[in-house]
Length: 82
Image 1 (cartoon, rainbow, N blue to C red):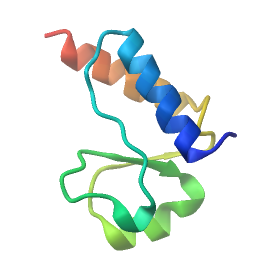
Image 2 (image 1 turned 90 degrees about the horizontal axis):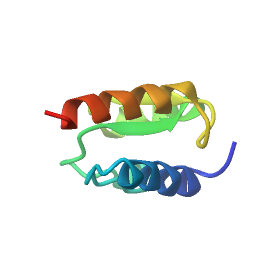
Image 3 (image 1 turned 90 degrees about the vertical axis):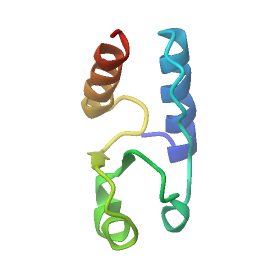
Image 4 (image 1 turned 180 degrees about the vertical axis):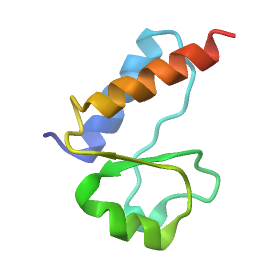
């Protein structure tokens, strides 16, 4: 499963390797900034996240190898090719 900090680092490195300059940061739920574009969090934390932000939310079950992270990566790659 890994930790959320480890997951953010792994995803950031994956984006960098693909040549994408997209900022990925790790925050405590209560500190998610107002200018965040999306929030990725463990599914078990959905309620807490929804109480502090209305940003688009991606719920995962594994911080390192969740299929939703692959989907997000593919979407970001496609969007930034143009």
